[in-house]
Length: 286
Image 1 (cartoon, rainbow, N blue to C red):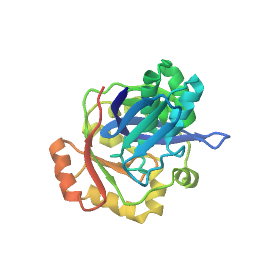
Image 2: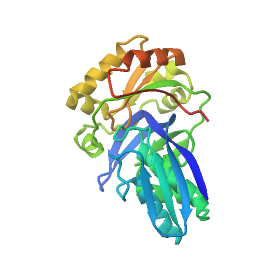
Image 3: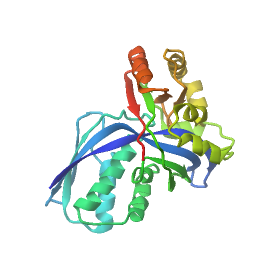
């Protein structure tokens, strides 16, 4: 038995840090949005009990340091499954980018193996397991758009009526998530104008979405990585001009919102030499 499935990336249209818990985890208000950029995962159930991961990129770990393996092991132990699985991972989502590739892969693994191993846990149980694997994993077990709170476990699904054209640009370096959170300065104030902000970000209107883009981690990243600040300036000043530009997650990937797919595609051509990864995508709609 084998199944192949796409595992989408996400962007943070809004990321506001609103507190820090005693265990060191930060609490957030955020809009998570899945996008058309995706990895591909193929699963083959085996009689042998081992969990094997193969990846087409040599820089991606294939042991328990990969959230795919961690998710499979956690689910297998939780349900007492004896069978094993061989997994092939083809990466299109850049790593260490703030696009949630690893978390999405883990969520896909939980969902598919829940079916293929005949476990049939409800979604609520998978989300509990997913949270133990990674804070962003529960979101990927749901729909394409959500208001997210806590450390990622409080998920309020949102409907959206249309896909929006985006350009994803990642420079040739990564940013440590832990360092970004630990060294940033936050006022811990909740999201202002929350109902209006959510309405704009779910509207499917590029202009309304662009006015609400915000990331509490971006000021620290731009200050400590001058190349990232130069990249953002280049994106903003290259015609056809984007409606808005923001960093996703802990970065360093930038998302730029355009009025139309044609403008986004023109910008992709104009910016193709500014970074190793410049890819036109669209948000996923309900």
